[in-house]
Image: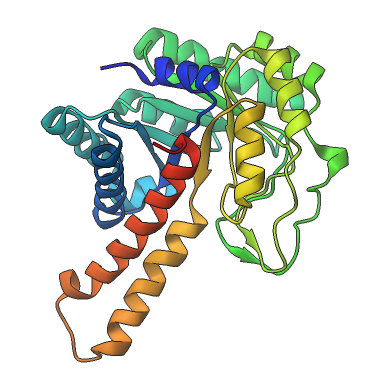
Length: 292
Protein backbone atom coordinates (compact mmCIF):
# COMPACT_ATOMS: atom_id res chain seq x y z
CA UNK A 1 0.00 0.00 0.00
CA UNK A 2 1.24 3.48 -0.82
CA UNK A 3 1.97 5.92 1.96
CA UNK A 4 -0.05 9.09 2.49
CA UNK A 5 2.94 11.11 1.25
CA UNK A 6 3.00 9.11 -1.98
CA UNK A 7 -0.73 9.55 -2.51
CA UNK A 8 -0.45 13.31 -2.00
CA UNK A 9 2.35 13.48 -4.54
CA UNK A 10 0.40 11.37 -7.03
CA UNK A 11 -2.77 13.43 -6.80
CA UNK A 12 -0.95 16.62 -7.75
CA UNK A 13 0.47 14.94 -10.83
CA UNK A 14 -2.88 13.33 -11.73
CA UNK A 15 -5.05 16.41 -11.24
CA UNK A 16 -6.91 14.86 -8.32
CA UNK A 17 -7.35 15.61 -4.63
CA UNK A 18 -7.75 13.38 -1.60
CA UNK A 19 -10.96 14.01 0.32
CA UNK A 20 -10.45 14.80 4.00
CA UNK A 21 -13.44 14.40 6.32
CA UNK A 22 -13.63 15.40 9.96
CA UNK A 23 -15.37 12.98 12.31
CA UNK A 24 -16.24 13.08 16.01
CA UNK A 25 -17.52 9.54 16.58
CA UNK A 26 -17.55 6.05 15.12
CA UNK A 27 -20.86 6.63 13.32
CA UNK A 28 -19.40 9.42 11.22
CA UNK A 29 -16.18 7.51 10.64
CA UNK A 30 -17.95 4.35 9.46
CA UNK A 31 -20.26 6.38 7.23
CA UNK A 32 -17.27 7.98 5.50
CA UNK A 33 -15.54 4.60 5.20
CA UNK A 34 -18.69 3.09 3.68
CA UNK A 35 -18.73 5.91 1.12
CA UNK A 36 -15.10 5.26 0.23
CA UNK A 37 -15.72 1.53 -0.15
CA UNK A 38 -18.80 2.07 -2.32
CA UNK A 39 -17.04 4.46 -4.64
CA UNK A 40 -13.97 2.22 -4.82
CA UNK A 41 -16.25 -0.65 -5.81
CA UNK A 42 -17.67 1.45 -8.63
CA UNK A 43 -14.23 2.54 -9.84
CA UNK A 44 -12.64 -0.89 -9.55
CA UNK A 45 -9.77 0.22 -7.30
CA UNK A 46 -9.33 1.62 -3.81
CA UNK A 47 -9.51 5.39 -3.51
CA UNK A 48 -7.57 6.90 -0.57
CA UNK A 49 -9.44 8.81 2.09
CA UNK A 50 -8.15 11.01 4.88
CA UNK A 51 -9.96 11.16 8.22
CA UNK A 52 -9.49 14.28 10.33
CA UNK A 53 -10.08 14.98 13.99
CA UNK A 54 -9.61 18.39 15.61
CA UNK A 55 -8.59 18.75 19.25
CA UNK A 56 -12.23 18.69 20.32
CA UNK A 57 -13.08 15.76 18.08
CA UNK A 58 -10.06 13.83 19.35
CA UNK A 59 -11.17 14.45 22.92
CA UNK A 60 -14.65 13.16 22.05
CA UNK A 61 -13.41 10.07 20.22
CA UNK A 62 -10.27 9.40 22.25
CA UNK A 63 -6.79 10.18 20.93
CA UNK A 64 -5.46 6.63 20.91
CA UNK A 65 -8.89 5.10 20.30
CA UNK A 66 -9.34 6.77 16.92
CA UNK A 67 -5.83 5.66 15.90
CA UNK A 68 -6.75 2.08 16.82
CA UNK A 69 -10.01 2.37 14.88
CA UNK A 70 -8.30 3.64 11.71
CA UNK A 71 -5.52 1.06 12.00
CA UNK A 72 -8.03 -1.78 12.32
CA UNK A 73 -9.92 -0.65 9.21
CA UNK A 74 -6.70 -0.25 7.24
CA UNK A 75 -5.44 -3.70 8.22
CA UNK A 76 -8.71 -5.63 8.02
CA UNK A 77 -9.74 -4.25 4.63
CA UNK A 78 -6.25 -3.51 3.27
CA UNK A 79 -7.59 -0.04 2.58
CA UNK A 80 -5.71 3.28 2.19
CA UNK A 81 -7.45 5.16 4.98
CA UNK A 82 -5.29 7.66 6.84
CA UNK A 83 -5.65 9.77 9.99
CA UNK A 84 -4.88 13.45 10.46
CA UNK A 85 -4.74 15.44 13.70
CA UNK A 86 -6.50 18.50 12.33
CA UNK A 87 -6.06 22.07 13.66
CA UNK A 88 -3.92 21.75 16.76
CA UNK A 89 -3.02 25.04 18.40
CA UNK A 90 -0.11 24.18 20.67
CA UNK A 91 3.04 22.12 20.37
CA UNK A 92 2.19 19.73 23.21
CA UNK A 93 -1.08 18.52 21.74
CA UNK A 94 0.45 18.23 18.28
CA UNK A 95 3.22 16.05 19.69
CA UNK A 96 0.59 14.03 21.55
CA UNK A 97 -0.90 13.05 18.20
CA UNK A 98 2.54 12.20 16.82
CA UNK A 99 3.10 9.93 19.83
CA UNK A 100 -0.28 8.28 19.29
CA UNK A 101 0.59 7.28 15.74
CA UNK A 102 -1.35 9.72 13.54
CA UNK A 103 -0.37 9.67 9.86
CA UNK A 104 -0.41 13.46 9.70
CA UNK A 105 -0.65 16.39 12.08
CA UNK A 106 -1.47 20.05 11.57
CA UNK A 107 0.07 22.67 13.75
CA UNK A 108 -2.06 25.80 13.41
CA UNK A 109 -0.20 28.95 14.40
CA UNK A 110 -2.20 31.31 12.19
CA UNK A 111 -3.35 33.35 15.18
CA UNK A 112 0.05 33.95 16.73
CA UNK A 113 3.01 36.00 15.53
CA UNK A 114 4.97 34.91 12.48
CA UNK A 115 8.07 34.34 14.60
CA UNK A 116 6.21 32.18 17.12
CA UNK A 117 4.56 30.21 14.33
CA UNK A 118 7.93 29.37 12.79
CA UNK A 119 9.49 28.48 16.14
CA UNK A 120 6.63 26.21 17.19
CA UNK A 121 6.35 24.54 13.79
CA UNK A 122 10.08 23.81 13.85
CA UNK A 123 9.66 22.17 17.26
CA UNK A 124 6.89 19.95 15.91
CA UNK A 125 8.96 18.94 12.88
CA UNK A 126 11.98 18.16 15.05
CA UNK A 127 9.86 16.04 17.40
CA UNK A 128 8.32 14.20 14.46
CA UNK A 129 11.76 13.44 13.05
CA UNK A 130 12.79 11.90 16.35
CA UNK A 131 9.63 10.03 17.34
CA UNK A 132 7.58 9.17 14.24
CA UNK A 133 9.44 9.97 10.98
CA UNK A 134 6.64 8.71 8.72
CA UNK A 135 4.12 11.18 10.14
CA UNK A 136 3.58 14.19 7.88
CA UNK A 137 3.57 17.69 9.34
CA UNK A 138 1.31 20.35 7.88
CA UNK A 139 1.11 23.96 8.92
CA UNK A 140 -1.54 26.60 8.36
CA UNK A 141 -0.06 29.75 6.88
CA UNK A 142 -2.58 32.51 6.39
CA UNK A 143 -5.85 33.37 8.12
CA UNK A 144 -9.06 31.61 7.05
CA UNK A 145 -11.22 32.21 10.12
CA UNK A 146 -12.27 29.49 12.52
CA UNK A 147 -15.13 27.24 13.54
CA UNK A 148 -17.06 24.66 11.54
CA UNK A 149 -20.32 26.56 11.70
CA UNK A 150 -22.86 28.32 9.50
CA UNK A 151 -21.98 32.01 9.51
CA UNK A 152 -24.11 35.08 8.80
CA UNK A 153 -21.26 36.79 6.96
CA UNK A 154 -17.64 36.40 5.93
CA UNK A 155 -15.46 36.62 9.07
CA UNK A 156 -13.45 39.77 9.63
CA UNK A 157 -9.89 39.38 8.44
CA UNK A 158 -10.68 37.01 5.57
CA UNK A 159 -10.04 38.98 2.39
CA UNK A 160 -8.00 39.10 -0.77
CA UNK A 161 -5.48 41.32 0.99
CA UNK A 162 -4.81 38.68 3.66
CA UNK A 163 -4.33 35.77 1.26
CA UNK A 164 -1.09 33.84 1.57
CA UNK A 165 1.71 35.34 -0.53
CA UNK A 166 3.78 32.84 -2.58
CA UNK A 167 7.18 34.25 -1.62
CA UNK A 168 6.31 34.27 2.07
CA UNK A 169 4.92 30.73 1.82
CA UNK A 170 8.15 29.57 0.17
CA UNK A 171 10.26 31.08 2.94
CA UNK A 172 8.03 29.56 5.62
CA UNK A 173 8.19 26.06 4.13
CA UNK A 174 11.96 26.20 3.76
CA UNK A 175 12.65 27.40 7.30
CA UNK A 176 10.01 25.26 9.05
CA UNK A 177 10.56 22.00 7.18
CA UNK A 178 6.86 21.13 6.86
CA UNK A 179 5.62 18.50 4.41
CA UNK A 180 2.40 20.27 3.42
CA UNK A 181 0.88 23.71 3.64
CA UNK A 182 -2.63 25.01 4.29
CA UNK A 183 -2.77 28.47 2.70
CA UNK A 184 -5.36 31.22 2.61
CA UNK A 185 -6.60 31.41 -0.98
CA UNK A 186 -10.16 32.67 -0.61
CA UNK A 187 -11.26 29.77 1.57
CA UNK A 188 -12.70 29.97 5.08
CA UNK A 189 -13.86 27.62 7.79
CA UNK A 190 -17.57 26.94 7.97
CA UNK A 191 -20.29 27.99 5.55
CA UNK A 192 -21.62 31.50 4.89
CA UNK A 193 -25.40 31.79 4.52
CA UNK A 194 -25.14 34.16 1.57
CA UNK A 195 -22.49 32.00 -0.10
CA UNK A 196 -18.79 31.40 0.43
CA UNK A 197 -16.31 33.69 -1.33
CA UNK A 198 -14.71 32.43 -4.53
CA UNK A 199 -11.34 30.71 -4.41
CA UNK A 200 -8.30 32.11 -6.16
CA UNK A 201 -6.87 29.28 -8.31
CA UNK A 202 -4.11 31.51 -9.69
CA UNK A 203 -2.84 32.14 -6.17
CA UNK A 204 -2.97 28.40 -5.48
CA UNK A 205 -0.90 27.69 -8.57
CA UNK A 206 1.66 30.32 -7.60
CA UNK A 207 2.01 28.89 -4.07
CA UNK A 208 2.35 25.33 -5.40
CA UNK A 209 5.12 26.43 -7.76
CA UNK A 210 6.86 28.49 -5.09
CA UNK A 211 6.82 25.93 -2.26
CA UNK A 212 7.02 22.57 -4.02
CA UNK A 213 5.00 20.86 -1.25
CA UNK A 214 1.40 19.57 -1.34
CA UNK A 215 -1.22 22.24 -0.76
CA UNK A 216 -4.23 21.43 1.41
CA UNK A 217 -7.47 23.35 1.05
CA UNK A 218 -9.18 23.89 4.39
CA UNK A 219 -12.71 25.18 4.73
CA UNK A 220 -14.11 23.21 1.80
CA UNK A 221 -17.70 23.17 2.97
CA UNK A 222 -19.82 25.57 0.95
CA UNK A 223 -17.37 25.93 -1.93
CA UNK A 224 -18.88 25.54 -5.41
CA UNK A 225 -18.06 22.51 -7.56
CA UNK A 226 -16.61 24.86 -10.17
CA UNK A 227 -14.21 26.38 -7.64
CA UNK A 228 -13.22 22.94 -6.39
CA UNK A 229 -12.33 21.79 -9.89
CA UNK A 230 -10.33 24.96 -10.51
CA UNK A 231 -8.46 24.54 -7.21
CA UNK A 232 -7.59 20.93 -7.99
CA UNK A 233 -6.43 21.87 -11.47
CA UNK A 234 -4.26 24.57 -9.89
CA UNK A 235 -2.54 21.96 -7.71
CA UNK A 236 -4.47 21.38 -4.47
CA UNK A 237 -3.70 17.86 -3.21
CA UNK A 238 -6.27 17.44 -0.43
CA UNK A 239 -9.54 19.15 0.51
CA UNK A 240 -11.10 19.36 3.98
CA UNK A 241 -14.82 18.91 4.55
CA UNK A 242 -16.31 19.25 8.04
CA UNK A 243 -19.34 21.53 8.31
CA UNK A 244 -21.20 19.74 5.52
CA UNK A 245 -20.88 16.43 7.36
CA UNK A 246 -22.02 17.96 10.65
CA UNK A 247 -25.07 19.45 8.94
CA UNK A 248 -25.92 16.10 7.30
CA UNK A 249 -25.47 14.21 10.57
CA UNK A 250 -27.63 16.56 12.61
CA UNK A 251 -30.31 16.76 9.92
CA UNK A 252 -30.52 12.97 9.81
CA UNK A 253 -31.06 12.72 13.56
CA UNK A 254 -33.67 15.49 13.55
CA UNK A 255 -35.62 13.90 10.69
CA UNK A 256 -35.44 10.43 12.23
CA UNK A 257 -36.78 11.64 15.58
CA UNK A 258 -39.45 13.76 13.91
CA UNK A 259 -40.76 10.74 12.02
CA UNK A 260 -40.54 8.44 15.05
CA UNK A 261 -40.56 10.61 18.23
CA UNK A 262 -40.93 7.60 20.56
CA UNK A 263 -37.80 5.90 19.26
CA UNK A 264 -35.23 5.31 22.01
CA UNK A 265 -32.70 3.04 20.31
CA UNK A 266 -29.77 5.25 19.23
CA UNK A 267 -28.64 2.89 16.49
CA UNK A 268 -32.04 3.36 14.83
CA UNK A 269 -32.17 7.15 14.72
CA UNK A 270 -28.44 7.39 14.07
CA UNK A 271 -28.87 5.21 10.98
CA UNK A 272 -30.44 8.07 9.02
CA UNK A 273 -27.68 10.41 10.16
CA UNK A 274 -25.04 7.96 8.98
CA UNK A 275 -26.74 7.63 5.61
CA UNK A 276 -26.70 11.41 5.17
CA UNK A 277 -23.00 11.56 5.99
CA UNK A 278 -22.27 8.71 3.58
CA UNK A 279 -24.12 10.38 0.71
CA UNK A 280 -22.37 13.71 1.33
CA UNK A 281 -18.92 12.14 1.63
CA UNK A 282 -19.35 9.99 -1.47
CA UNK A 283 -20.37 12.96 -3.60
CA UNK A 284 -17.34 14.95 -2.47
CA UNK A 285 -14.95 12.05 -3.04
CA UNK A 286 -16.30 11.57 -6.55
CA UNK A 287 -15.87 15.25 -7.33
CA UNK A 288 -12.35 15.51 -5.90
CA UNK A 289 -11.06 12.27 -7.35
CA UNK A 290 -12.69 12.67 -10.74
CA UNK A 291 -15.09 10.60 -12.77
CA UNK A 292 -14.44 6.92 -13.37
